[in-house]
Structure formats: C-alpha cells, structure tokens
View (cartoon, rainbow, N blue to C red):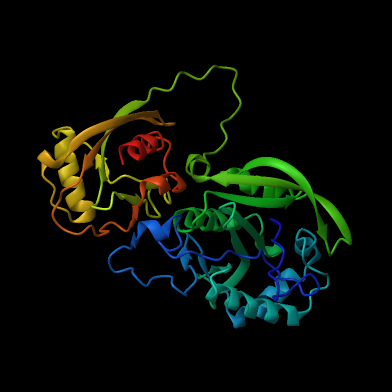
Length: 382
C-alpha cells in the first residue's frame, strides 16, 4: 500500500489515525487556476456548478470511485484491521479501533466541504450489495503545485488489478481537474507489489526517505515516486528483453493550427484539455488538426466555431509564429495565429475549461511542451 499523508490538523491525528491517505483541497474546473484574478475563468456550458461541493464520482472498467459515506466504516475497519495491510501504512495503529473509522470518515466530509482534501472508496458495483475494496486519498500542496496520492486495498482483493485500475483513474482525474503539475507517492521499501503498481501506471522512482510506521513501532525506509502528465499518458507495458536492436521509430508529421485570441485588455484565451483526451489537464491555445483538404486558416475558422462558438474571418487571422516538437509517436508542426476580432462570446463546447490570461501570467499555466516556446513570444508582443 502506498503511504498515506500526515493527517490534517483537527482531524484524526497521529493518535487517531486515518486509514487512507489524506486528500487535497480540490479545485473545481477553472476555479483557483494560477493567476485567476488576472484571467477570469470561463467554465464549460452546463457544468458551471459541477463539483462545487460534491466529491469526484469516477468509473473505471470494473469499479466505482465515490466519496466515503458513514456506512463504509464497518467495511473499512474490517479490511484495515489486518496486519498485512496496516503494516504498510505509516499512520495507522494496530489494532485499529472501529471508532477511529467513524471519526475519520466524518473528517473527510469536512475536508471535502472545505475543499482541502478528497478521499474516495473503491467500490465493486457488480457485487450485491456493492462491496468496498479499499480507499484512495489525494492532497494538494498549492505552493509546490503537487498532489500526494495514497491508497490501500483489502488483502482478500489483492492480485486482481484493483489498485492499478483505480489509482490510475484517480491520478488521471487529478492531473486533468486540479491545479497541480505533478503527483507524488511514497511506498514502504518492502512493499514491492505497490511499487510495481506505481511504475506500471506511469510513476517514476525519484528517491528514498524514512517515515514512522505506528504499527511497526518505528521508522522504516520508503521509496519516493513522482508522475507528470507525460508520464501517465506514456505509460506502456515494459518490453521484453531482446538482443536485436529496435528499428528507428518512424514518426508521422501532424499539422495543427492554433490561435491566440487576444481581447481588448490584452489577455489571451487558453483552453484546458478535458479528462479523456491526451495531455488532459494541460492548457493550450485553441485550435486543432488541419484536415487534408484544408488550409491552416480554414481549419482555425472551423475549429473556433466548433470548440468556442465563434465566427472568425480568415482575414482576421494573422500568422505569428510556429512550433515544431517531437512527441513519442508523432512530430507536431503547429503554426500559431493571432486574432483580435471575432463575433460571439467564447463558450466551452467540448468540456474544456477556458481562461482569459494576462501576458505576464501565461507561464504559470502548465502547457504541452510544444506550446511552451510560444509563450515568451506572445509576452513580448503584448
């Protein structure tokens, strides 16, 4: 099991320990983004009040991830009060009293309402009645813009891919919806299966340390892990060993047109890629792929209408710069246009989050590698 974070002050503390990782103050789509005071966020149509106070309810191929409920206490107490589980969690005593499960669940609700922390139960909805398999927690450090993730799974559900499937889903959700640039995790050095789970879903080992383990009665070495957007999306099964050199990768070139829409206050419109798309959670300039029968200008007119509901004339698109960047599976060539005149009000029509961002705030928004070199050019222009 991945190590949980230290409990929140006022919640179940070291003497009253929570059975899962402490979670983050969740940021609703577009809220609390870097430089918000200077940017003004536009939320997706039909989603203006989504996730204001409700926790994430996520689905995987087999499982449901939902906020903890008072009725979960019995199952949590039964599953955590197992030496094979609790010995891998740094903040838990053994035996683990039932009363602490009730107190901890109540504290997670308070943290969720304050948007300081988020915890979810891993549920098997196919069981009748539904069955709790484990928990995941995530906490955000706004200073470092990192989310620390922890989880545990009941011993009788091990070796069924529960942790990998559930934690991967939570990690992708976090990077797509929270104001973070990376995820961190800590694993007891002798917890080889959990370390393998993290590596398999895209985490990189980045160091080591020591943490106190209450159940073991002292400090124990831990492995430190980290993952960013590119790590999770590039996660693939490790190739089998071979003595034959791999042939060079032939990457196709993809032409994508992008547009810097600039308003009367000199702010630039950015769009945050929604969950479910590659590089979800990163901010980019609106635009899209140029089809074989299109010019870049024609593609932008079409994309800006489809994505934002804007009526833009080709004559109002001024070529400004371009980006050329090699990704793992393709090479991106992206001309960037500048536009100061259009008809309509930008509306998020494809689930993305929009933000008007001042030029001196652009570098505070995490972007795909291809977009980053364009920021200083825009800043100089504005």
